[in-house]
Image 1: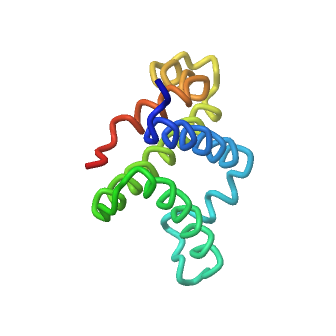
Image 2: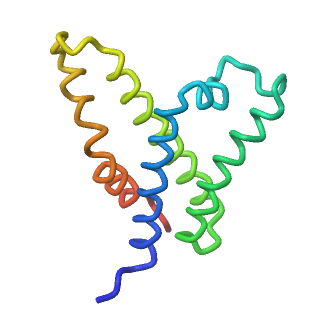
Amino acid sequence: QPPSLSGLVGSEMCIRDRTYIEFGLANEHIIDLMFHYPIKKTDFPDLLVSADKAFGMLLKRLQYLHEGNEDSVQLNSISMHAYVHGLLAIIRMNQRIDTSAKTTFFKASSTVKENLEKMLGAFVKSLDFS
């Protein structure tokens, strides 16, 4: 049985979002400039444009899964954006913890990077495309 369109696009989204997270880890200052919320983006129009383009790419991918339902596209896009940025923040926090700490957060957050595809795939499957 061939994979469904949503399955194919969902897999593509997982790969791209994993790549986005890897970019964020390698270029944390760029991500901070684009998405660090205390910075007033209207004072830095190029940052606003970059952040909007990054979100626009996510929005465009999710439009494949929606049949013209603009409300679902908007909600799922912002949900995916929040989830990906949350995972990126968790990985970054984990990298700053002294490994001797052995806290429950350190143990749990240490599993995120190695399970990105699984976590992203499960999240995409949980989105409502109706």
